[in-house]
Figure 1: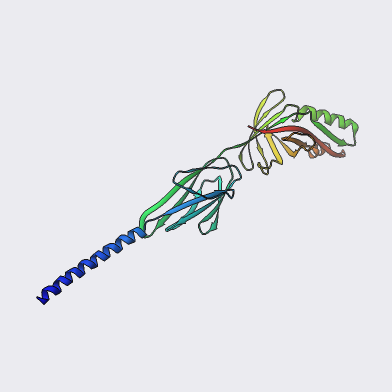
Figure 2: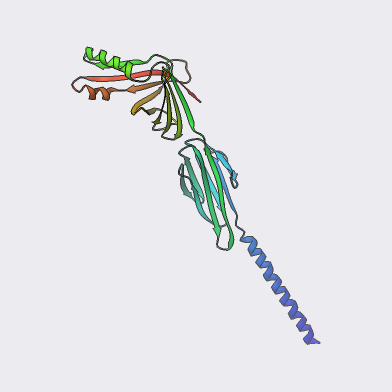
Length: 265
């Protein structure tokens, strides 16, 4: 009788042992379930969570900070060439928007104890930034040289051959931080396509306009004399050009300046 009781105890012990192993196995599966969260903040705003195939709308020059939290191995943040991605450490990344368009951003995480690898893709949509400058006053010609006869010749050339005439229009479509496409509409309604560059299209303190094989280097300065909220002076400095053309002459300054109205389109 005693041997029968011992046998029953042994069977019960085996059953409890296997039950505990199965329970531990289930707990291991649960603990090894791969989870990854990606949050972002744009220009130091509050953080928001991202899901698969979400789209963020941003502007040229915006800074977006991403945080990646995972119980797996984080393979980092990767994306298209128009996004500058800088790793800050501890799952933190800073991204600067360099050009317009739609960029694909992604993150891959994995766990050695799980087959549930995760690939998360999302998108950043960046519209082009568009400026429109219209000349609203007759330009001013500055010809500061010693030779009066040559001065008249240069003044005539400025009026005949160079832009910045009344009602000239420059439509600038910025698709990158350093420039984009140009449409120049002259006073005579000629429409000419070209390109432009700038040291920073967000500030627009300078712009080099290129069309018909010629580059015109303008500086831009806010109009402080009038009541125009969006009045800007475009100035074209041609001093070096005419010094090269007339090397024997004393040429202090040759420039064209015009008041323009800046708006967005």
